[in-house]
Image (cartoon, rainbow, N blue to C red; front, side, top):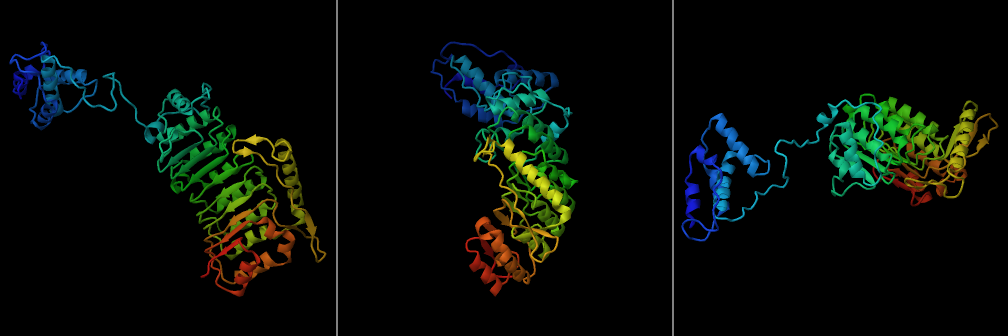
Amino acid sequence: LSCSCLRRGAAIDSDDEFLREPRVGGGACDSGSPAKPNAAKLFARGRRRKQRLRPTSVARGFDARRRERSGGVVRSKGDARGWDRAIDSLQCCGAKPNPHPNPNPNPHPHATTMVWTAAGNDAVELAEDFAFPDADGESFVDDLKAACAAAGVEPHPHMLAHPLTGAPVTAEVHVRNMQCDRNSLACLLEVLKAHPAVAALRFHNAALSQASVELLAARLPETTVGTLAVDFNDAAAVPDKSAYAALAGKASKLRVLSLRGCGLDEGAGLALAANLEVNVGLRALNLFQNFGLGDTFAGAAASALRFNAGLQSLCLGSAGFGAEGVLAMLRLVTRSEVTEAEAQRYADAEERVASFNAAAGGGKKGKKGADGPVEPLPPMKPLEAAEDGSDAKFMYGHASLARLSLVGNACAPAVAGQARALLLGPAAEKAGVKASLRLLDLRGCGFAPSPDVDALLEGLPGVMFFDEAA
């Protein structure tokens, strides 16, 4: 190095020299040579130098000086030694030092920056009736930060920006492969009341707790959210699986609900089936990979959906159905019996349809909702007497169901004959299966190649999908 003051600074070893005030000089050093300091070399030399242990009082003064010069960021002693020498030497030569690269400068030396953690947020006791009426509705991100600050928690990172693209949240909140705490969710639901543009919530492998699922069921009707996906949620996080059924309750305003891979069992399935009968706003339901539902749920769901005129798409893939479960769902779209004891349920369904259409405006498109215009419901299928003269009555077809997926529910190959009778027989013709059912997915159900399968493929082109192997 040509600058003698830098050479002197490089030879300083005493602690007192580090605690001196920086030297202030003119534009050139005492050697008369132009200032050519190499701060990078000095910085690297300081990192490589082995530090001696200092008394506590000296270390405190040294840390205070480093904090003052680095904008509140305390670095290791090895880093500071070379950096302090470079600062002193450059000030001696009258040059302006280049600030240390710091992507997150902190102008307040004693301030702390909180970092989001699920455990940290859950440790805050948030009132059950927490409300945030101060959202202005202009910036969703700003309102969410303000609500979290009022609650004393940190906002969930994925609620501020999309986890894959990093774009700010505008139309949907997507929490993916990261645990979501209840308090962040409570703040989110409060802010959504002032932001109708955010119409979808998606939680993928977010480990929502039972309290969080119950909070969603209670608070979502107060928002304009129309799409909710709680997919592949940790089964252990929700001990009582029937809590999911409340998401499709009578008060729900959801139009799309996905509960894939949430470990729903038979009890949860029965509770969900009961809610499907009275829910007239739901248009699509996805229960894929809930292996514990079984044939009991299939029978209950088929019975309940006869009195539901709103559902258009239903996915029950890999739901643990056997032959009885698959046939029960096929009867739903062809011919299902409505006994005298169920006549009141049919009358109640007609009243729900009329009330919904009146609230929707009664027009062809209806009022505009969060996911687009709210279309009126089709009328219930009329009841017809049995051909044998018995008191039983039958409903042919379903009022609205157009997509049905039963993929992955293995059943005996002998079911193919019964499926052919249901889907190509006189009952199917009367129900108008070809005109109403747009997609019926039976892949992986064990239908072996047979004349029955060939007849189904020929009779319903473009609608049915079968495996060619058992």
